[in-house]
Length: 242
Figure (cartoon, helix red, strand yellow):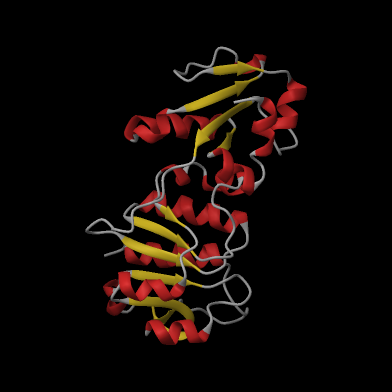
């Protein structure tokens, strides 16, 4: 891929048009290489390296660039000098695995939140991530970095409207204030778990149409709400505790 096209991958429209996204830094490139060992899709990538990483052991084609060129390719202040360009994965199948549960995020906006959530889902395994229209692009470089490689291991679907969930998941739960505690036995018995936008939550009419069972994370209520990523982390941990 030409350097000019690589620079364009910081924008969602070009990621979609060119079918690739950026994977920056030693840790993430290592995670991509690990993922390639288990999933053939990730085996096709290109490396852009400065002289520091000229001898990086990898089967992928590599392109040597200057430090100035690397700075133009990345959006970090002090790039490490190692950048992979990976293909966007095909759309995740709508058919979940037999023991898989879904985490649905409604209009998640913060790249750090989404990346952290993907990292958590990858750690526990057995989850897919569904994103509503209006959510941050999961292949945004900031999301990819925050996921710490989790994005290579979690099936992600986007542009999923809440109205379609009822057809796919017979038992839907939502995390909200004032619901039943997530420590109750019934929390485990659902197929899809809804989490709202960082500021606005999930529209009440959508919850009503889905007949979603409301659950909450008990606390002292000294602050208004939990951070979205923290709420997902706690809920997913609880689902794996049994």
